[in-house]
Image (cartoon, rainbow, N blue to C red; front, top):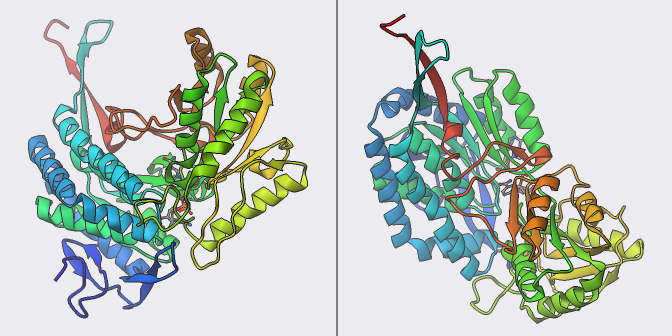
Length: 488
Ligand code: NAD
């Protein structure tokens, strides 16, 4: 029997608590649907607040022994997990497409990307350094040590069901933290399958616990209220991030927030347009636009506006929309009917304010939540589509006359996650880096996420960084030891 299926019926995926697959306390389940056709693909035990408490208890119980393990031991568990995930990558890719909808080729890409966090942090686990020195007056030596921050709550979204988890789990394991993971209710199956990987990799019971639930706040509430919680790491919408930050303030819990975005994609008059078109397709349509890094607004110099718009529309019109399991599909469905309705309302709002649709239309019959990649020109600045995170395969294209105007439009948002700059001029790129308020900038590249790079935002896109050598810092606390020197 598959590990994550609970023993009682052999069909329902269980909660993973203290090394065991279990039913929920009240024995209820929720269903997971395939967004391509609305079919129920699985049922999953629906964790309650009592299950959240049990999972957190397990994490607290395991913390001291886990923190005391050798970095090499933790590193090798992560490396084992990397090898197992690589071996099972095709199964993971199919599962991601089934529950989230993205084309199978992109799911394979996500598995590889997600797995790099396990490999990267297996390498970082043995390099958690401190520093030594002395104070300027010379009477004290200075030693800093990094220690695991402690039991952590990790809450993740549905859009990258694997990578958003490994980006947190990798550094947490490397640093010696135990954790409770609350995956998105729309995509819990990938998370549970990752639990199986860690069992096989030899992770001790209680270090990693997974509690899918249809009632998110019943999970986060009791854990955030427990004074033993040391860290919350959340990836999701800015609105929910604010709720969690407020709740975390009560016990002054360390918060890392990877929130929403409204990325500007700037094309200057000196840009290589072939590269800009390629980058625009990737930055807008990777993950069907359901990415926090997705280009939300194309901001294009007036001298190349017509050509850029026409060529990008031609590319969009060639793409095939359909079931992600078909190798011929370029763009899968949106995650659910709510998302589809919201994006359609953004398009209608822009059209009513005078925008022009320059891509072809296509009608889809339900129950899949399909939408054609869409470009809009002549978009009024006050349109919702300019100011809200779209999270779908639609984008407005606006024009600018000079660099100052480009920076001003780019920054006209409360978000500051990704940005993209297409120019052949290094001077202009460096000015863009000075001027644009964003945690991430792609220069002549539409995809920049990498396990080795620090990922995170400014303004209302969040706090903290994931990935890179910086990613582990959020899971450690720094202790300073001042030592009397013999000469003093
Ligand atoms: P969401 O905020 O609705 O949900 C994210 C997670 O929070 C889910 O697990 C959900 O169940 C949980 N949640 C919802 N309400 C909660 C509450 N009151 N208390 C505790 N947990 C709660 O976001 P989503 O729709 O799953 O994901 C899309 C959003 O995520 C977009 O805004 C996107 O930009 C953002 N995102 C950001 C990054 C990043 O790295 N910055 C990456 C991916 C997605």
